[in-house]
Length: 106
Image (tube, rainbow, N blue to C red; front, side, top):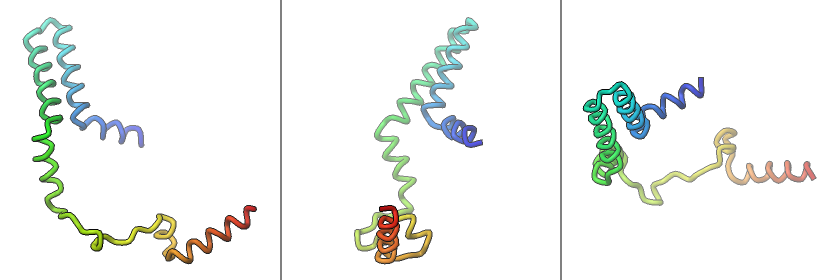
């Protein structure tokens, strides 16, 4: 199931879509339909050029990040390790337990 999920996620990426369009161009050329093959190949190239252009990236990235304004360092929450968040411990308690575990292993 995980492999299928990763494959489907990759399949909707711009690079995968361009590769599928290129495959369609190759199939059309193989079948003797040169004009359709050229059309699919040009469409694939335009697709890659649009998605790799900085102007499109700035526009698309701006629409994604518009809802999340930048924060100052004081506004960001203090980061904790995943172990601390899972157990609900503060820094001192976490390091005391960690030192006890290290001493037990010696």
